[in-house]
Length: 361
Image (cartoon, rainbow, N blue to C red; front, side, top):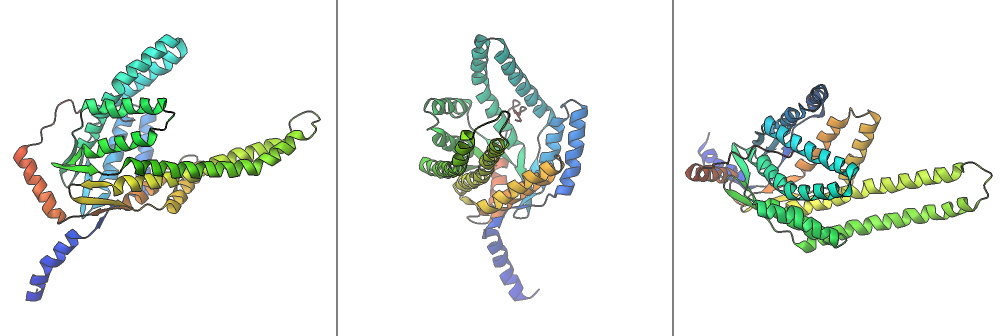
């Protein structure tokens, strides 16, 4: 190595550390298919009990294949904790379904019980999932309180219901702000700065596009329906009318499947473009055209293969979402990791024993 190399090397390294870092996802459909088929078979044989261990295997595979700045993520979840959550979820919804078949009184009592415990369960699940995720050996965490969980997961959704869903964008913004602001990596907290107006605008665009499509579809089929209905019938079912109804329903579902990726793309870009980790900014660059193509071809692939394409579809979807993400560092990532490690070592990172529960819906 020459003197010039010695002088320039630190600058090149530092420039690399300061430059935007794209996320990468190296999982493949064929690898995940082997994990998926074993998980499926064992879950069936064990009547669902193995599904908790299946989730751990799946998450460890996906986390370890997600990379950022030459580092990867890890999942440390405990299958027993996940099994506890699934048993709790099964018991809750079994009692809910039972109450529907008994009496209105039991149904109301079950609604009150679910309202009393579900926000707490969601809160514990958030703690579990974040604490059991790590990057370069440093764990994530969640500091939000149970009181906040009841506010954002219970009070606001109920208010949205009583305002004929006009508060849904507001509730969505508040929930994401709660989740992101209360999350941390090591000792560094995330922050979320998207405004309520940004969510209302996104929902408004989605609503206008949906309504416009429905108006066009109804207009195209409406005249044909009226003409067929007015035709004199000679007994039996009118094949032309039934065909028109079928194609009308098909057109409605097709439009929904086109609109959903557009809305999903806008929401993900809004959320992650408004999120920081300390002074480091995230950026999401999903394109609705490609997202629509992936979702529609995934659906067709799953249908045509009777479900066997599902693992390949999942990998395709995750790969596009993850690789559309970029971290724009404010300084060296390595220096940030080192400083965070030192802070954790100095202050400790004790975790309560109650972090052993994952609702795992």
